Length: 354
Ligand code: HSE
Image (tube, rainbow, N blue to C red; front, side, top):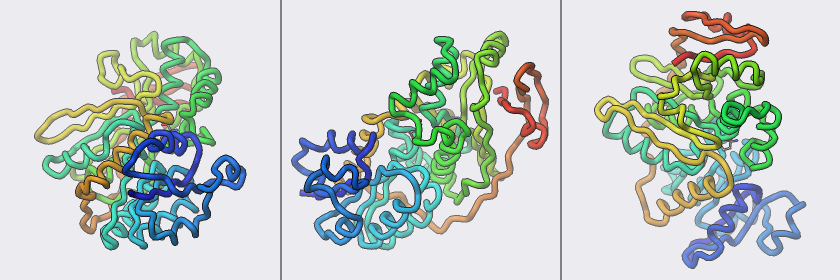
C-alpha cells in the first residue's frame, strides 16, 4: 500500500480524494488544511510535522496554492526522500530548479503536470518532445477562467462581470481572480512550460504581461466587427533569444486557438522537425485538475523516469514587440505597428494581431 498525504482540501484536493477513495493500491492517510476543516476530516486531519515525520508516507500531493507553506513542505518532503506531486503553479514557477535538483539529489520524484493546462497531458509529452526535437515556439491558452470569460462574452453576449461570476461559481478562478485577469497565472504557467521545453531557467518577474481586466462588451463588438476572435495567450519563442509574453490576441476565426472555448486550454508547440503539435483539453476545474494529479501518481507508481535536468543557464527575456497591435482607450480603437512597450502600457487594453 502506498500511503499519501494530501495538502489542501479545497476544489482540487477534494477531487483527488474522491478519485482515490476506492483505490486498493494507494491510500490517503493524512490531510493538511485549516483548523476549520478539522471536524470534516476527522482522524485524517494532520499537522505539517506529522506529515513530514511519518515514514509511511511515500508521496505528498500538494494542492493548497500559495508559496510560503507549500515551499516549506515541498522542500522538506523532497529532502526526506518523499515524492511530491503539485498543482501549484506559483510555487513551481518560483522554485523550479531547486525542486528538480532536490528530487534528483534525494532519489525521489517531483511532478507538476496539473500546474499547467489543467487536465491536458501536456508537460510530460512536451518535455519528451523537447528531448529529441527542438521546440522553437509555443502559443497557448493556459488559463481556463479568462478563456471562459472571453467565450461567454463573444458567444453569448454576457457582460464581463456576469462571465467572471460564472467562472468563480464553477471553481475555475483563483481565490484572488486578479492573478487570472492580469495574466500572472499565465506568466507562471508560461515560465514552467517554456523552461521545461527550452531546458533553461526563466524567471517570472522577467515576463511582460498585459491583462483583460478592462474589457467590456463595446470592445468585444468592435473586435467582432473587424472579423477577429479575441483570445488571451502566452506566446514564447527561443532560438537565439528568449521572447515570452502574456497578451490578449486578435486571431482569425481559422486559427486553431480560436476554436478553444470556455474553460478549455489549448497549446501549440512549433517544433523544428515535427512542425506543429497541438494539445487541448479542460484547463481548470476539480476533476480535470485532479485527473492530471492522478497521471503524475501513475507515473510514480510505474517507476517512470523523472525529468532529467542538467545544470541550466538563466535566460533573460528579450520580448519581440514587432508586428501590429490593437489598442483601445475605453472609447476608440486603433492599430499600432511595432510600438514600444511604454506606448502600449499607456493603454488600458492592448492585443497583438496574429
Ligand atoms: N485559475 C486557473 C485557471 C486554475 O483558470 O486556469 C487552473 O490553473
